[in-house]
Amino acid sequence: MRILVTGGAGFIGSNFLNLFVARYPEHHFINLDKLTYAANLLNLTEIENLPNYTFVQGDLTDRPLLDQVFDRFQPDRMVHFAAESHVDRSISEPGAFIYTNILGTFHLLEICKKNWQESNGKFREGTLLHHVSTDEVYGSLGAEGLFTEDSRYDPSSPYSASKASGDHLVRSYFRTYGLPVLITNCSNNYGPYQFPEKLIPLMILHALEGKPLPVYGKGENVRDWLYVEDHCEAIWTVMEKGILGETYNIGGNYERKNIELVHTICDLLGAELNRDPQEFKDLIVFTRDRPGHDLRYAIDSSKMMKLGWQPRETFTTGLQKTVQWYLNHRPWVESVQSGAYQNWMKQQYDEKIIK
Ligand code: NAD
Ligand code: DAU
Image (cartoon, rainbow, N blue to C red; front, side, top):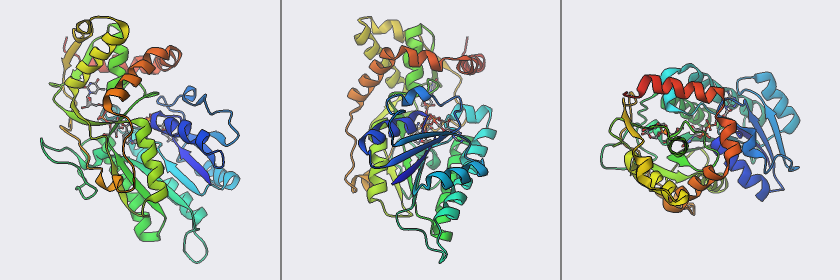
């Protein structure tokens, strides 16, 4: 297979490539990534010289470039990770989310349709677009219940609304044209190579630097955490065994309140560094809440599990591995803490921290 991966220099895309490029030398992986602030080519050093891997820098909406990529590599599969992915950024600057998550997805659908549709209107055997999406499209749960594949779309932020739009477009290309597609909607991922604007890496790195640990609102919001490699394995399983046109929800079955999670990170750092965890807990500050902040996400993964997938990592082992990874990868951390990151964090502080 020739697999075009979009957004493969970001957090989940690079974990996906690191796992599967080495595991499947018989497949050729082409990584198309614009290299936004969230991307880092250092994420891919393990595989960058392998003969079945090619990197192309470019934007999803650049149609001449998409034509060139299809002419040259003739991909028969696409795994679409590329997105603007951070909720807080979507609140302060939504434009890029509309551009990439909606318009970018539209351009990919069009290029796949153009290249994979045969003269009889049917699609070439073996072609497939796998659209990677999020549980946030379903909005917020109350204290009880789980998201299923039938949950109503009810997005709260410009990010989740743009992902919901992408999902709707993908589904419409299946229903209208018969384009072979699969959609997965996953809960919160964590693990190596996550950009430190997201909760877990942000807390680890702030604690190490003695900076405030900003918990939004009262820290009562609940997320369902999944180790990133388990998400990647789930995507591969769905590509192998999923039914075209269907949606599969993926979750870790590990719900935690944000404040509890931050305490656990402080405990793990204390244990790793032989320091009193209270030193880190004293850095916690409660800030103004995120507007439109979804209270709780939790996933019913039973449809996914019927395909034979289940998470391998427990939250305890996964979080410990993640803390150790950030402690042991200082050059990576320094590479992402560039000007763009510093400016963003400064803006966050100016707006949110209650001084
Ligand atoms: P990320 O922000 O770490 O990476 C996104 C990547 O997309 C970056 O490498 C970036 O350069 C690239 N990109 C952005 N705009 C582009 C464009 N116009 N053209 C080409 N490339 C572009 O994101 P992530 O956390 O790895 O998420 C990947 C996907 O998984 C997203 O679609 C996201 O919605 C979805 N998802 C993420 C999570 C999570 O917890 N992180 C959970 C569920 C679903
Ligand atoms: O559920 C899947 C989604 O998970 C993905 O689609 C998104 O791309 C990904 O960013 C993530 O969204 P969240 O908004 O849930 O993740 P984030 O790490 O930004 O925040 C997790 C929770 O922690 C959320 O309730 C907000 C809170 N938070 C976050 C940050 C960055 C804080 O309390 N303080 C913080 O500094």
